[in-house]
Amino acid sequence: MMEAYERFELLMNQQIVRTPIALASMAGVVDAAYVLQRAGHVGAAFLGGFSIDEETILASHDLAEAGRTEFFFDNPVEGIRTEVEKLKGSDVVAGVNLRGGKPDAFAALADEIGDTVIYEIDAHCRQKPMIDAGTGEYLLTHHHDLCDIVRALKRMDTCVSVKMRVGLTDERALAKALWKAGADIIHIDLMDSGHQKIRQIRNAVPLQIIANNSMHSYDRVMDQFSHGADLVSLARRADLHTLKGLDAAIRRYADEVGWYNAPKQLCRGGDLRSLTFCCMPVKECPLLPALKGLDMSRDEYLTLKKGATKETVLEGGSHTCFGSLAWCCKSSTPCMFRDMTLQNLGISKVAYMKEKRHLAQKIMEEIFHEGPGEIPC
Image (tube, rainbow, N blue to C red; front, side):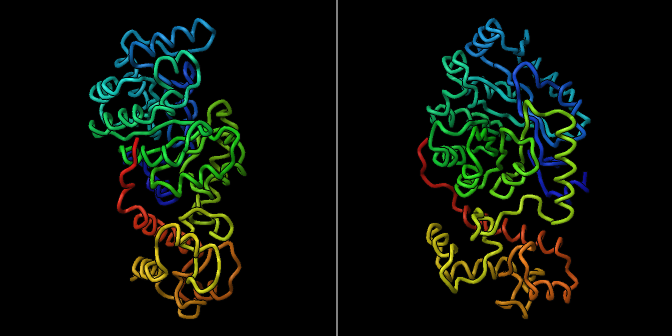
């Protein structure tokens, strides 16, 4: 697993993720057996969805009577625990997608099962019986209720994900509210929207982002990665052929480039992580409005990047345009001065991009260091 960490540097719930591909939950389908069949080509999986309180269990029965598949357990806690335990010994980071409307129900489940699993709140299901039960999409238009559930789970010292879909609310405002409440992961069904939603949320919060919906082609996956996604998830197209192909292609790109989800450069529509590739603010370019939006002065930006690269390999580079690799662009952009400097310093482009990723992490930590402020849920 250390090889996987060196390749992706990706953790979820303090566990190494072997590949940034996840299995999304599908009620009545995604159980431990389903995951284990695909375990060789995924890094994380969300079992479920599981209904955990009286209202949602009744809603599950209504759905089953209408012909949909559902998971039913005589004892939901024991049933979910059994499924989670079946994944022990695999390299898959386990999550459980839960449908409920009462914070106490989530907290009670977490108290029984513990912190080895990610608790994913289902704010995604659009079936009317679930909405009427106060879960699924209902929570997207009742932010306070959703934040109450997040806080209840965080009081149990757990890792919390929220599965949501776009198009029903102000996603950036909701993401900030969830960040304030303590969420760790946002799992986003993009519906028919493109990468713009991923970029908007990446620029709004420092949470892990999983992009969902039609992530079965390499081009679509890389589009989400280059605009801020940390992982992608698959549901109906999660067959072994598709997963194997994506896994191999993503690993190959990571090994060739050094940063599997490197952003596009800011001037080409990149998210805030792309500040790692920006030069000094000496001309009119997208950097200036980006800094203005962050309420960051030019001097503060200069100080940030100089401080973040001090005593790193990016500090050097006197023959580059601005005298330091800190201001140099993405490795895919042709630049003979950068490449000559890297060669003289004995630094590969892969190592250079890994250092640029570390710089981006420091920049994002500074941008979000004060927290989201007073954001109403």
